[in-house]
Image (tube, rainbow, N blue to C red; front, side, top):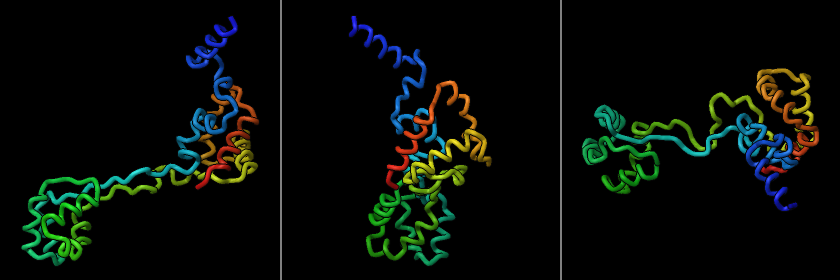
Length: 196
């Protein structure tokens, strides 16, 4: 009977029928995710940064060949690059390798910068901040007491700015799920232990 009751309790927890505060437990990392802190402060409080590069390299327009000639790339080299016309590369390394296959390593080294400047479009690089999140603080590695105080001050209305308003947007969720000071301390402890 005891085993049956434990099984039913576990199923109810997973299905979301019991209060969320019971589900959250005291795990700071879990609380950080469940309270959606990561949506503004990034995974592990490291900020909302890009996790990969986004770029496109292609020689799909004829005017690119004209630009390369204007920048000093000889006409015979641009002609050798014609097999790359309309091909798209998301990785700079693969693009350079394709260039090498067409014009050789020596010529690639000589004209690589010009070709990349003309044919490459970098949208963002790994580690860049995501636009719109530049003002949100990174919390990883900060002191526990500082992090705890910031959370409390914002939720109690002692700190007010644009970012504070965003955090206060989840206040009703926090209140409804009976998130306690100990829960905030768990989050603060978790973030303080994260290494940048």
